[in-house]
Image 1 (cartoon, rainbow, N blue to C red):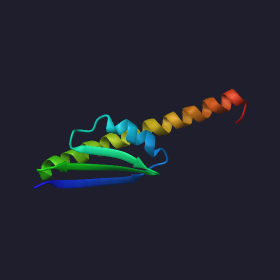
Image 2: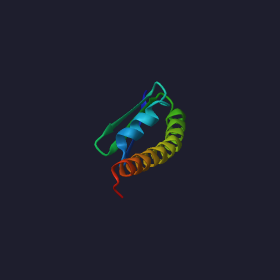
Image 3: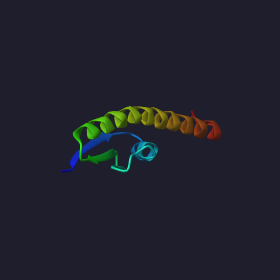
Length: 86
């Protein structure tokens, strides 16, 4: 029997987050961005594995969100510095 968990979250930088977090995905995990959503599907034969994977994923998601937000702020600041805009 396969057990499946799906996590769907909304983000300003969904593609950046999906790209960042999918690097750490286990073989039974799939992550993609759809518009503003990051969707991750976790499948296993054991409920404990799904729960543990979701817990790890949510910790990684928090870090990815912070990194993508900082990256966006840095890119915006560099753009404004290079164009003379504030």
